[in-house]
Length: 235
Ligand code: SF4
Ligand code: SF4
Ligand code: FES
Image (cartoon, protein in one colour):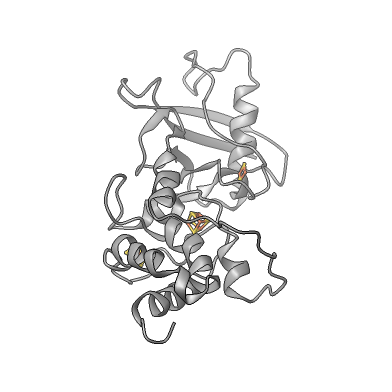
C-alpha cells in the first residue's frame, strides 16, 4: 500500500511551523502511524515527496502498545495514539499528522504535557497510604486507574487550555478514584478542589466521551464524582 503523509514540522519552540509531505510504501498490513514515522526515520537520507532533504521526524513513544499515552498526536484532525491508528483504516488520501494543539510544542510532534502533572499536584491527587488494587473490573476504582495522561480528552475539550483553572477529564478521571475511595473525613479538601478545577468549568456536554483511546467510561466517572463532590450530606 502507498500512503501520503503530511506532517506539521517545527524545529524548536521558537521556529515557525511548516508542512512536509512524505510518501511511504509498505506491505505491513498492521502498519500504524507509529510504524510510518519509524520507517520514515530509518531512511538515509530522508527525502520529502518532492525530493527535498528533511530532518528526522521528532516524536514521542515508549510502549507502542496503547499503554503509555506518549504518542498522542492529531491524526487526520482527531487526537489519537499513533500506535493505535492503522494506516489501512484511514479513508483520507493524504494522512495529516500534527502535534497536540493544547500544549506548547517542543519540536515536530513532541509537546510539553507537564501541565497535566502540575494540575494533578494542584488538586493533590495522590495516595498517602498503601491501598489494595481493585479486582472489580466494572468498578469506579479500576476504571479511574486506566488513564494514560495522554491529553486527547483535553485536545477536544472547548473549555480547557493550558494554565486555566479548569483541569478537564485528565484530572477528573484519576481524582474520581480518590473521591470514591477515601473515607468521608479525609476528602473535604479534595472535594473543594474538584468543585473548583473540574465541576465549575465543565460544560458536561461530554464531547470528550468518545475520544479517550483507553475507552474510559467518562460518563460513569463524572456522574459519580459530581455526586460525591456536591452532595455533601450523603458522601
Ligand atoms: S464534558 Fe465538555 S467541558 Fe467537560 S471535559 Fe468533556 S468536553 Fe470538556
Ligand atoms: S481520560 Fe482518556 S483521553 Fe483523557 S488523558 Fe486519560 S486516557 Fe487520555
Ligand atoms: S507509544 Fe505508548 S501509547 Fe503509543
